[in-house]
Structure formats: structure tokens, C-alpha cells
View 1 (tube, one colour):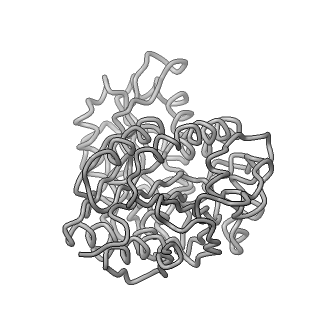
View 2: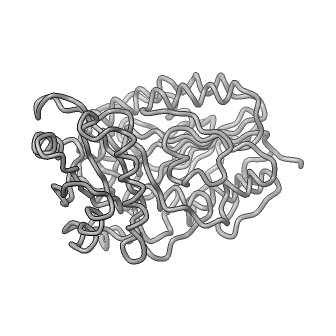
Length: 393
């Protein structure tokens, strides 16, 4: 199979939106602007993102448009009905969701909770409210340790999260409980993800979440980019939480990365290894640590840190590699609440043998990314418009 690029490295800066979409008001997100407001807060030093063309996408404080960007640039709309992790990532793979995954702003109904308790054999639950994961273990962690009742909570995302102290509920037992919850949550209650949220510590003052988190996602429809590549004999190397988002469907290799640094390390390792196909990474800290926690300074520092490490990624790339940087949704750390925000996402594309300085415009869907990857390897998705031809000399 002849391809234009031997490998495509797709990196998702989780939640790095670049301005409210036209329908943002319908989601309560009018005026949201993740990157715009982070850059407005202070000078953020991102020279390599600037060279790629970040400031060419739209005006950003302190990031001028590059006169001769080394990359091509644009932005993508989220065409699906939603603004969560699963929706954004699935759309990148060519899956357009007409119906959003259900959310539970008032907690889960009694029927679900009662069935969960009965089938798992836990001594009841505490919580059952939307909450920050770090705050709820401070609030309810000591009661959980005392009673053995797991903490169940949700968020503005379509998630059923179960927090438990690893010395109270052993990690294998927590995973078993989550698997049962995944089976129960079906039909109208079919949340996008069930998430195990283990923690350790002695009391509310020092409880901390461990790296033994595990996600149980709804399996994606079979017609999507990852199994299409795998079935064509190509590598699909997934780093960080990518494999869990797709329930490992179509994944040929999973590399662990619990935070941005680990994911960048693994991405560089994957680029330095022999492969052909897709390297797909998610930088979770932007969303988990700084977006949801409404920490614009932390967000700014994380962008600077990623920018400092970008040269490592560039240096690991071969002449026939293509790099795509994007996001899955917004999560404006200056916006009220702790929810994701309905925003366009940036699109930056770079390759040593790819055309530079191309304005890719406003793409109608994140599926354009998946369609571009598919076309590069002689394949086709059901959704999306490829921009591959724009990158070719």
C-alpha cells in the first residue's frame, strides 16, 4: 500500500479549545475561549507553537502570526452533539454522534444505585453527586474509610466514577466493581465512561489519587479509523488514555502515560521505534489538572512546558512522518463552573516534507483529521473531508 507519509503522529492537547463555537450559548458556554483567555492572562512563552502557526489561526495575546510558519494551521468544529472526551476523540476517528451521551447533574437515579449495590455487594455508597474528584475525596474520604462504602460521583461529563481507598477496597476489587457498573449502565443510562478512581493517604488533609485509574468506555462503532488502520496491517500505537477511550478497539500497542511528561516521553519513544501507521497520544494534564480545576496559571505553565519539549518530538520525527496537534473540546480555566466548554479546537500540522504555511481554514468536523489519516494510507472513512492534498507539494 502506497502512502504519502509512513507515519502520522496525532497529539491531542486535551481541552485546548480556541474559541466558542456558534452554538456555544445552547451549552451555557457563550464567551468561552480556553487558549484565548489563558494567553490573555499573561505572556505565555510558546515559541515553537508560534513557529508552527498557532498565532496564524486567530489573534492570540502575545502570540503573533508567524510570517513564515513551519507548519500549516486551521481550526476544527465539533460536529457531534456533545463536548466531552469520548465525543471529541470518537469524532476524530470518523464517528459523528447525533445523540449526546447522558449526563446526570442531579446524580444517578435510585434504581441504578440500588442495582449497583445489589450486584456488587458493597455496603452501600456515598456521594452520588457531581463533584471534583480531588474535592470529593477530601469531603467523603474519611467516611469511606470508616464505612467501606465506595464514593460514587459524576461530573458535567457522561461518567460514573468510583473512588475508593486502595487499602479499603483492593485495586482488583475496585476494577471488578467498575466492570459491574459498566454492565448496569446501559440503555438510557449508557454513560460514556465508568472510571475507577483509587486513592491513598491517612486523612482528608493528605488523601491523593494514585496512578491506578482505569477507564471502562463504551466500545465505539466498528466503522472507525483505528480498526480500519489495524485491518490494513498498519500500526496503531496509543499513548496515555487513548486506548481506553476506544475500549482498545483497533489498538495494536498501548503505551502507558499517566501525565503529560510521561506521554511525551512515550511519544518520542514511539517515534524512535520502527513502525508504520498511527501514533496517537493524549496530553491529559491540560484538562484534568488545570481546566476542570479552573487554574489558568497552571494551564499556562503546562503549555510552556509542552512547547519546551516540542523540539524532542521534532527531532524524533523522520522525513516521512507527519505531526498533527489538536484538541478534543474546550475547558476554559477562566470560565464559571468546572465543565468542558463547547469550542473550536486548533489544528496544527507539521512534517519535514509537508507543505508549510497553508491556511487549512475552519474545518466542519474533527472527522477531517481522521479522514486525512485514512486517505494517507489509501483508506476512507464514512465522515470527514481530507486536507491531505493541501499538505502535498
